[in-house]
Image (cartoon, rainbow, N blue to C red):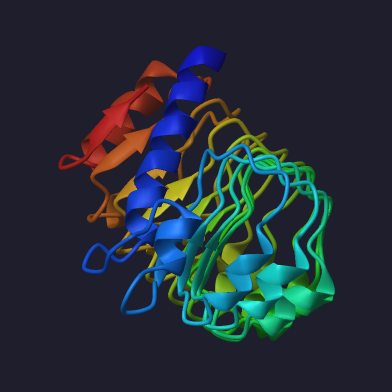
Length: 300
């Protein structure tokens, strides 16, 4: 399983690399090529260069919008990075970073920040000053806390914090009204907070492999939700209000302790896939579920 997981993460990293860069513009694969480019380089790829620090000449690339430093050996943030104030995309996936310095707030044009697979323990208050930020990727770190100021990133569309050590998410999360995808799987969360149900544009919510025992009735407010993944929690039942999620297409509840689904399950006419593997659901309840959801693929 670990081998398969490694392959999956590698493929995700490759896909992310392709998606982050603007394919209509040249991407320079070395600093020298970027420094001599005419017109000035806008995109620079320095991934897999075994870098421990950055060449100071990088500060001359004042128009740089995209910089990938993924899979290097950076342990600290080089201060030269903060001179690149035109940056819109910064990819530092899989380095050895232990913190995010307050100076990150100088990157005011930043729209996408990828810090996955580092050793970061805290998300600092300065993150809230990145008002253009739309995508924040922080999976596979050592995060134990997210700064309340993350609620100031009101353009944020994607927040990925899976594979950390978070026992709670800040209440200010409710202010992220543009958020479409939230992945907080593989953490230490004990509850799904009612405040999260104010994320009216949320389309995908992944809370797999936490310690969640119940879902709040307010879940009915997530009208835009299409995917809900709750694999490997401690749910024994679902609130009846979940049947009000008319746009929900995928519901994954594997590995919980559910014996019976809500009475009005049949209202979920948009549901296309329901996965209930690893739950103690009796045969008669399985038959009822299939009868109520004739257009849905149900897996026990």
